[in-house]
Length: 355
Image (cartoon, rainbow, N blue to C red):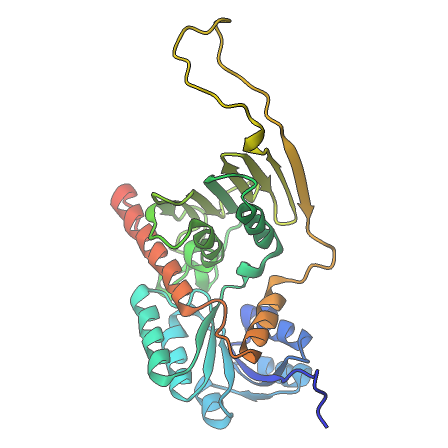
């Protein structure tokens, strides 16, 4: 007899056993064995297939086509290089599979629209692995902003910087590589959530400085809108000193911090005296000043905080169990891709960058 409290496990397969497929998906899915059952994997390298069979007790296939043909359709993760996403996702959808595709969902806006059309045509579900929507620091920043203790948000600055020279396949434009495609979808998805639903005006400078390939390794972009905070986002592999990840400026306070520690300072505007414009000469020949009734608060990531990769899958299981669609949709990925396309256009137009 099945326990009424026992959760139904979802069968799931993974295509691509490289860094992302192995570390971000298989290892984390294995930690959620009560929610997901890893049934099959696909990879061209035999040693990777053997390792998966041994560690996860699953079946393995040399190609995605073989997996799709021999396994019973359920959910599949497409964790292969970006330039393969369109064709492989379309193939999986046409065979009756629901798809979780790694970010970026595809290299271009048109490819994403084609993938969405394929999902609509087949009646299957397509979602994207933009798991940083569940990152503990982002969740807390959003909570503070939504509480309105900082007042109207004027600007949000975020940095994902470091100093690192790469020479792998993701440094080549022909493979859909570059910092904006590789790293950008995560902070862009976060920033677009904080920006709001309006279409942003995009300004961007991107270039390749130290990577061995020809794709961008430094990106500076600004999103603006009439009823939205200004978004200042920097994603760079050319920052030897680094910078704080978060800085939020509001009309009643501000927030700053890292991925593990945040602090914010704020005041209750109702405690301020009413002011009128005084255009006469100041009595003390100085500027008008006042003392604000500041309050402070802080947050530190709990020692037992769940990684965003795990929370993504836990939330996906919960929503599917309730008959709800995934929280992060292909439309979210399309919105990210539209901003990326605008970034490339603006950087080329203004700065002449061809990356």
